Amino acid sequence: MNVCSYIRSGFNRALVRFRLAVYLWLILLALALLAAAPVNSLLRTQLGHLYLPEKPFQPFELYLLEALLANQQFFAPYAGFLLVFLSFCLLLFVFLGAGLFGRMLTPDPVVTFREFLADGCRYFWRFGLSLLVFLPFLAVFLLLFRLLAAPLNLWARQAVTEWPVIISSNLRMLLAILLWTVFKLLLDLVRIIMIAEKKKLIPAYAAALRFLRRNFIRLWGLYLILGLLVVLISALWLLLGRLLGGSAGIGVLFFLLLCQAYLIFRLLARQTFIGMEYSYYLNHRGN
Image (tube, rainbow, N blue to C red; front, side, top):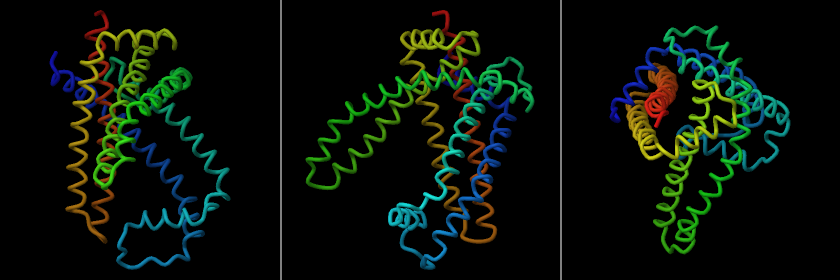
């Protein structure tokens, strides 16, 4: 199979399970609405007295950041709530990831919400433990990034103009993204092997590392090509939002709908990544 065949296979597998994207979108929307009420109350209480010009020279987010830096105790009264909410989100995302992988790797293309929740429960603990075992790999990622970014940091410190600083900053961001895709690919393979091969956690990590040792360049290349396609489509989406969005009325409504459609697109793209990785694994696991 060539590059297009693997990407097409992943997309087709995601498309017939489009309900997964809808389920995830509805859950994330409910979570956002749950978080919006206390955050909105916090902003009104702490920042309601601030004056913002009708046509500010900088985005509202920058004014908000400036206000937060000026008041270091801004979130202190809500620290307990934020800690509980973030812990809940972490557990929820592990559960959703388990349900997503479980339904994406099943041979049955028909997806129901009950089966999605069942897979989330079935693989929850294994997925949670996979994150704990992933922590040493995360430490390796940070160490590699620091080592590879050191020449760029040195170049930026010795710069006499702003251009080397700007270029090195962008190169560091690109380096971090490329390195992260390697480790993210490893974690995805571990989860695929745990479900597809019914292996336990440590044997799944060992099998994933052996598989990447034999197939790393080709699989990583597929991952990057699909990632580039997602970035290009995202850029076009952003451009469309800027061109057709407005500051009031229909323009605001259209922008909100476009944002929700983009969220569903990103969820479908995540499914495509999983489908592509699974298709490649099935075709090369015997090699």
